[in-house]
Image (tube, one colour):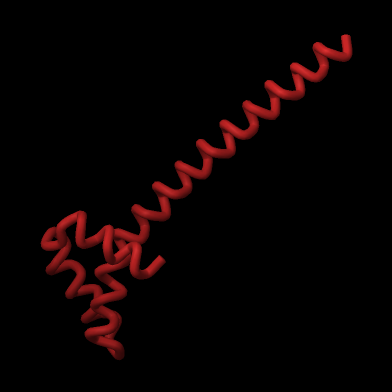
Length: 79
């Protein structure tokens, strides 16, 4: 009886660890996605520090111009 209880605790602990890791992966993916979307805005805001509208306009004009590898480097720089 005691042995069965220990096995049950181990399996529930393993399941909990699996679910936590899965949630961390999902959260990481979400954060990276947000960082990729926000990196051009941050760069544009440096170029136009006093004008949020100009920064957003610059982002809209260069939306498809960035390669994913460049975005990944920008994300690593800002995170």
